[in-house]
Image (cartoon, each protein chain N blue to C red):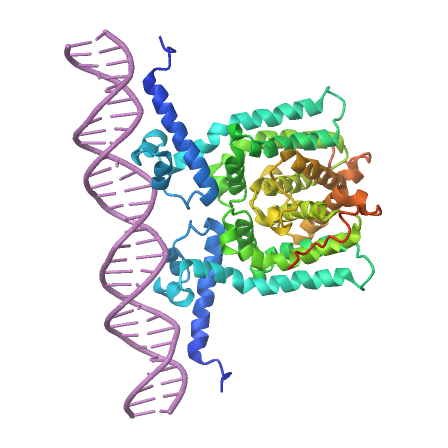
Length: 240
Length: 240
DNA sequence: CTGTTGATTCATCGGATGTTGAATGAATCA
DNA sequence: TGATTCATTCAACATCCGATGAATCAACAG
């Protein structure tokens, strides 16, 4: 027998891990990996310090675990919406739908505590803007698969565009998205409260047109023009 | 006599401060405020640990000084280009010129070591995406004056646009810019080297059209339409 | 030359850091 | 029930942290 009733033991242990993960997610998002001590996290979770190393091996292990708890769900949401935007095969999708699929799950995440809420969104921003992110590989694990799929969708919409130009435009679009996820409060501060990031639909109604137009501005003149010989047949995904 | 020849004393001291500032700028940009110890900075500057507290009071004081050394020069550049974009009074400026003035100095900064180069650019990104930035106030000091002036220029181009919509679009534009300043290496990584951030002109030739189109997408339909009564006469800068 | 100023060095302070091994105790299993 | 597993607690480890007061030394003024 391998899959029995959870057992009060494992169940309690699992609850402890969740308490630690919740405290770590909140504190890491506010202060950064190096700005928080394991003692602070343990105190916030109302558990002993040693529990963190027992359950997660190390502080770094806990940091990784905070992301791992959310990765699958977020990736699933983004790819699901992309598939819906792609619709039936053969026909190029609408740019607006692809941009919405690219952006919406990440913005809606902010107001959905089950998906991590603002703390997890801030944490993603922290990791995405950290020049030492590579050595951890969390961003790659989280976003590489969706990135190439989204760029393929963009390539369908602008068939003549060289792959490098698609990468540039995609990079800019992600930048716009990341900053919108950051919730630094600077928009509210500068606008003296005239703007608020509390309603995700209010954000999306403005962010999606901005990014959509950005793509058009970068790639629009490739829409119906023929690709040059060197650009044709260049795959967006890397070759083995 | 108060302003004599510098004196070898002050001159040597000033050189020490510069050594510390350079080391701190590099290390803070790579590892963050909490990721670097004053001992590491002192070692990189080949000076005693106590020198940091002697010259800058505290670690926080050094952090602030790293920004202060660059603030004036950067603000001057940005406002100078904006003034040139605004041209002669009365006539609305070209959107492309305003966007270029908004973006170019920050991108050119990356390849100009005298302005801080990539390290200072990364440091700005770190500070801009930190939710605890407010308590330090560095970003406000650095960007508030220019922000309002740029938004006024945008308002001239889209006379019917409500101030809140201008704030939204400006916020998105800054996000695109900030991510481009980050130099995370992810663009190069995803594109397998097909794109590179080394040449600022290559970046600007793509980034400016992206942001320009973003503004158009958000505010374009306000360009020649009349403002509503509630929007008219609403100043962009805060009232006293 | 003499006394003073101020930059630099040295040693050290109290405390916080991540991590660990041993002890504890309760749920689980034979 | 008795043995065992394992989550949890406790105490401690070695190290690093930011900061400082006293000592040192050279440049400067008179």
